[in-house]
Length: 162
Image (cartoon, rainbow, N blue to C red; front, side, top):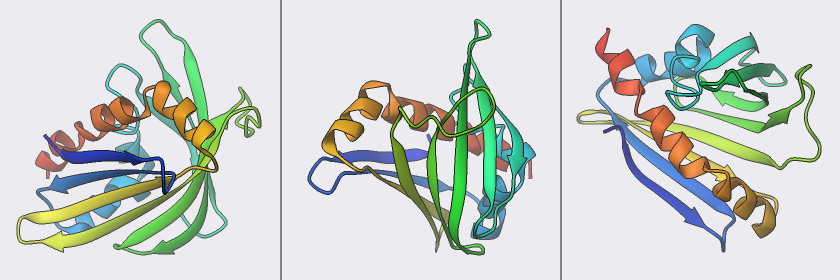
């Protein structure tokens, strides 16, 4: 399995998810910047994502929807703050309405991705920062840990394709 740890920390208001991937950082980076690859794993297997916009550059935005097995949809958005190509990116992320606009009634998190080369490939670390314990609890209770773990478990198959 790709994910080696998923640790929520209420003191620092973070969720840290670490995965070990059998591919170099340049290949793993493509999973984040190519929307067709991203939508193959962003979202649990039963809730696949479709990216309708993806502009990975500082100031750029992404919009997507995840579709559940019964046709229910959940929309999301990203706003890119910083990108260090092949190494890291930092985004704000949140839920969106049907038009892709941020849903201000739901929490927004700041997520940082770091890729580091290892002897066996790449260590991918995602740290999500929450604004409050209440917002963190809300998202954890909605299944954020399991959802991220299930989503990331799809990465190995994509990387195995070459």
